[in-house]
Length: 69
Image (tube, rainbow, N blue to C red; front, side, top):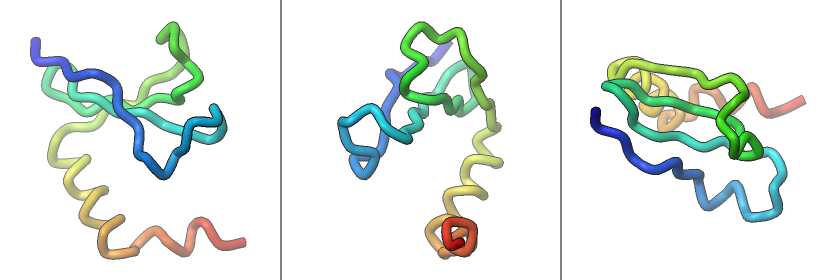
């Protein structure tokens, strides 16, 4: 089992607000809310290909319109 520590983006800040964390675990990328330190809440799991496709879209600003109200 290849597991990395949970990490969060530096843009998330350290105030405990709206943050997500990601890690590599059992051949998948897992994403969770950083407030769930006990690990009892929901965790989203993505294949490497799915995560790569998401990151590529984010880099190309394909999701930017989702944050504008």
